[in-house]
Length: 195
Image (tube, rainbow, N blue to C red; front, top):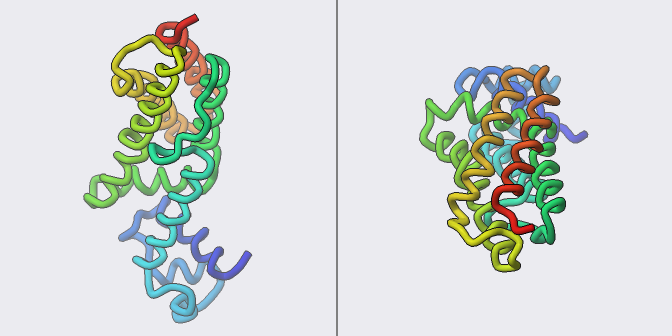
């Protein structure tokens, strides 16, 4: 792992634990095992590190979860829809970087409009937009009943976001939350998908 990668990793951990304002450049350097001035060989400052972390997390999320810009291959049947949804949730619940970034954003969302917008994007608008496109595409294939695809996307994603938040707060409940998520997605498909 390069020094730059160590800086990013340690900073994200500190941001998740202490928040942006509660983390100093000196703390970051100490956790990495370098002197504070050496950190400036890699980044201009704390804001530059934050920008790099956001870019890195956004790219990772886009690659492994998807977005309203990149929905991936449309599921061709009920089981593919369920498995795709469960795999995406498992990624977001288990990926250490994404978990730390979510913890950081949830913590900071009330202190910064910028972080509030990012939190809304990742916990509501982005996921809802992605699933609206997936459901609309599947409606076009006759797999979902004709209905308001945006409302259906909200119906399937909102409870999932609540269970992910519970698993973040109470990690010992993560397995139970995943079971409830899969049960919810199956029920959603039973109600809204054509046989």
